[in-house]
Image: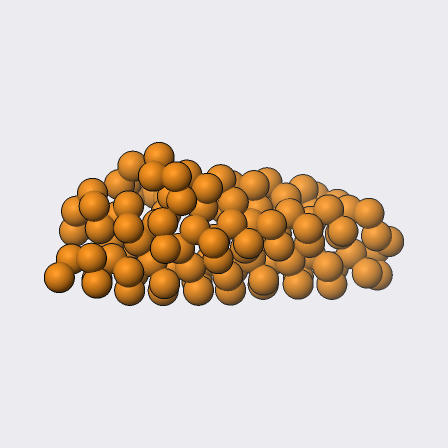
Length: 110
């Protein structure tokens, strides 16, 4: 049950970063958002990169939340599978968003 709660909290955090990036309220920093060489070059590149990453990042957060909630509601044999699928989906979508964001920031810096 603890893993389900951790996954829900992580999903909320990832989705929040995505939303903040989308609306331009995520300041350039070294802790949250797409942090690649391209996005950290300037405030503008960081904003462009995180705006481009937002759809996949928010979807990843939602996948984490869904996996955690489903895991909390299921019996132990099924719980681990839901949590694992939610965590993998969240990580994969966050990586996809990061790649999209980094590419967008590279294009914006030209």
